[in-house]
Image 1: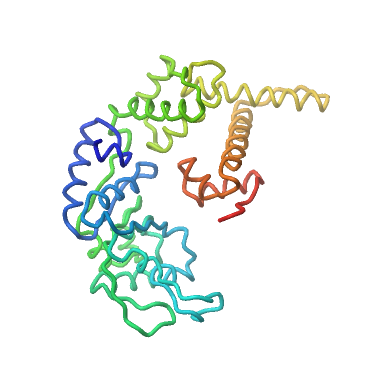
Image 2: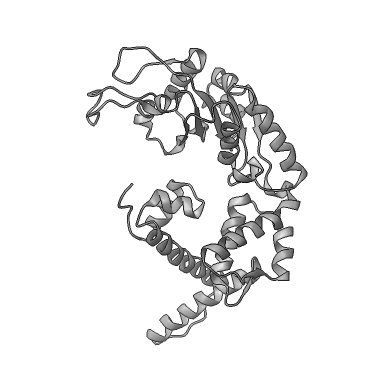
Amino acid sequence: MDPFVRLNLLGSSAAMHAMRRQIEKIASVDVPVTVLGETGTGKEMAVRAIHYLGERKQCAFVPVNCGALPEMLVESELFGHERGAFTDAKLDSPGLIGEADGGTLFLDEIDALGLKAQASLLRFLQDGTYRRVGGTRIRQANVRIIVATNANLAELVEARHFRRDLLYRLDVVTLRIPPLRERSDDKIELAQVFLDRLRSRYSRHEMRFDAVSLAYLREHSWPGNVRELENAVHRAFLLADSDLVSVGPASAAAAAAIAASASASASSAGGADVPRGFKTEKAAAIASFEVNYLRRLLEESNGNLSLAARLAGEERSAFGKLVRKHGLARDRSN
């Protein structure tokens, strides 16, 4: 099997072919890498490909979202801590650097790191040494650092929010992930892959896109990129009343109809039947879909937010906010 297919880097466009060739070159050299790309383009999948196509593939791949690390605990999370280093430090911790020894540490949203943590990371990149929080022993680790961001690090440097010397250390090699609007040939291909997975997952093998949806899939710019496309197909699949999946305006109309029906029932119960504006109906449709979708994912994951977020293809923090927004079940195991 094509290793890129196995690693879920799909698409036959010229932009994807060029990116895959660049990944192969980067995987063959052991240097820090900065991965740039808009939200939803698949930066982590590209980083995983670099790791698993390189010489470190037998060792650990440790991903971490820097934006999810509490500012006061960033250094402890990265470099570990000694028992008793702070109130809740009841055991020694090797930290993410220690866990990734021999392998790859992927720091997503690197722009979210504070200046103090940036200084510590810079020191590690310079000579591979670090010290655990609360410890005195100088340790060494052989770790490949790969970072990703959708921010402009050069602008952050000028604004003094990111260290210039750290940027130079990290930016040895840069990999840019193309947005979906630059991959027109891939839109239908990806949508079909997502549909095939849903047909298998829900045992509804007769489902297929209608002709209008195929045109919409091809022409829409998809500002949320692959993640938006996947979620749009999933939503349309769940809302389909027949074996035809309608993505785009038709799908939005179906969601609005569901919300309108619910609204009519509520109005009837209250003794009133007042039509609502388009924006109100649309918001109600989206809310109705979100609640039903989240409930099902939480049931499938037994309340585990991390697992549910992975099933949804969303960041855990953003997924958690959505769960809290609708007052649904809290994570019971993570």
